[in-house]
Length: 357
Ligand code: SF4
Ligand code: SF4
Image: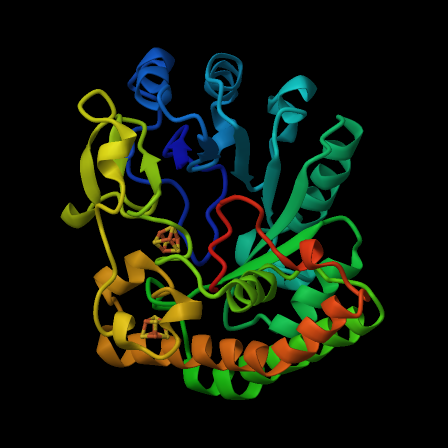
């Protein structure tokens, strides 16, 4: 199972689509339980994946170090904005299986949404991780908003040759900053997805599989007959542990009743499996097999109402349709030995990339 461990509710940035730190009363800025409590909770799980999360997790490096040293998880992952890379010792970075660095694409897009000079600092962090001997999967984690051009921004990050994989999450449902969402979808996002799928296929024809996470994850589902619901595992086999020891179905669902599943000292992971599930309209949707209901939080909260939910479904269906269209060609390339099936099947384990943007 995946345990998303919040090391603090505090963040050192205030990005436009997020707003920065959690209020202290919702997610305390210090961890209020002991590593022994966490050890006791997780110890029966031989396949535990621990992902450090925040706020900005590197504001609490001592806790991360202690967890890595004392809890025998199978994998460690961290999601960070990359500004405090030096806070963690090289020996701890070398224990990470995946590092997700937040960056939104081109310099002007990243710096507009995240803060001035963030782009340069993130690239520097990516270099530093290599110097410190990190050999795992380096993932660029993007938020895609109204100023983003998904084609140009994803392509830009791929061409930097710094990241093994690029993943994006759409700034939708919880965001109220859109001026013209429909216009952006038809003039920018859909054409961008189409061009990106073409580029992905052209590279595969030359034997190269670009690490575009949503495409790989959906293609994995197509080749293997389906995806889990929801794809991120929230409420099914992925749970967040807040700084106060609360177990939550999803790491951002810090203030909603449906997501609260108890405290780490009260329950065991096996009792949590499949605690919160996605139902209609998703389970009857023709795309459910490859979409999995997308995001549990968005499904439960519907902050854009029914119409907004359907608008996001429409772009999810668009991306999946494009990938279904090229799937026969992908199978042929695999059978012809031009690309290796293993290169396409991603992620190997739940590394917190949610697959469906
Ligand atoms: S496309 Fe929409 S309705 Fe269909 S499974 Fe995905 S989230 Fe649910
Ligand atoms: S995809 Fe949705 S449900 Fe899953 S972790 Fe992200 S916000 Fe939570």
